[in-house]
Length: 515
Ligand code: AMP
Ligand code: MG
Picture (tube, protein in one colour):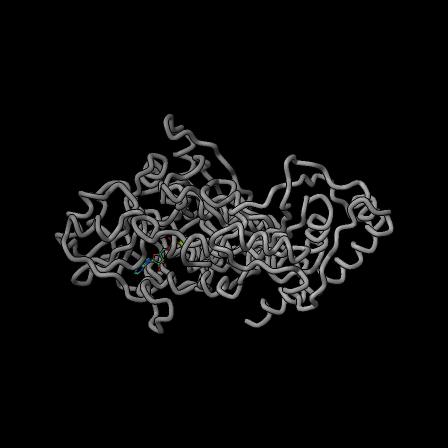
């Protein structure tokens, strides 16, 4: 890629109101296009980098400004259907039907080109891609610019496409003559591309107009098979689809599977980064965003609305470039409707780095450790705090419970004194009673002494994973209560627990390390 573009232009940024378009600004922008300059403008999909599509030199400038490989053809934007004739050699009947159904709108069609279209615009191909956008500003500009405006997404090649004029400025300031700022775009992912030169017509890039929508109008539509299988060795039919694209700076990994597993796996992966002193970015949804405890978490939208996710996708990817994250983990989203386009872009952004959540979480036997003592005001809370201070390879919820707890009592003052002398604290701890809820599949229950264990085993049904701490770490020691005894006894209990918890951490880490 050509990274040595020198900033040389003064870029004008003009705010423009879609509901009250300022003709003077449009004329000024149109004049720039007519004399071969570059104008970035909003469309309903993403911001476009506009140039006169019939001017070979303007196409060259476009590639330069984007740092885009010149074999990646541009889409020609028109403002009225009648303009199609001049640039295409043949208009199939099905194309007319699709135009009637989806233009203006997020659909690009590929035709045999006419001689009016220079090879500079089509990346050397004999075909031309054409779209009629559903955006008043875009259409006014296209007409003012001469009727044929090539407009790739207005981002530096490889970066996420721009969905606001701020994104365009980030990438294009100094490289284009003018940016029309029309606010945020509506859809957020690029148009669906359909090749009309083959039978049946073929989807080369998924977008807001889905296969089902196309087939409802023209019958059978095929899908470029390189879009379906990530390890396909064939080159995609749309040349632009072969590049790593839409990509944030930090490496992105998609975690797929059952949503519960996905959240667990991402928590675990983010936690692993945290332990190495690194920061993970997390792409979450409204439904899951509050479940993450480490990393920089961003909400991409609600799973109830695929279009909300499409709209936020590139914004979120760009935001991670401003945070210093070392890697990004993304949840995966349903690939139906516009979700197919979202997953297609996300997979490209991730360079097909996709992992199975079930594989990540299957080795973790326990997710929660509960220490059980008599009244949950000394031994249990101390054990829990000691474990929280260990280097653990996986994330656990660590808690304590008591067998006899009538009130949410604060910790024993002598226990707290011992903790303070070791630069720790039990502050905020309140005694809680053990209950059947502590006996789920994922929880490891560790009691201080045998009688607590047996009481649980006899009092509850469905008892799983209940051990004394000494039994679990195979030392056999009991942890006696220091209740009512001098401070020194509390100190001894602390030391005993400390040694045992170190062994417990080793054991938990050992199980995690056996992967
Ligand atoms: P962008 O302008 O950034 O949305 O990218 C345009 C996309 O359209 C790229 O993926 C191109 O490869 C594709 N495209 C443009 N013209 C053609 C064509 N004649 N044949 C196949 N794909 C095309
Ligand atoms: Mg693009």
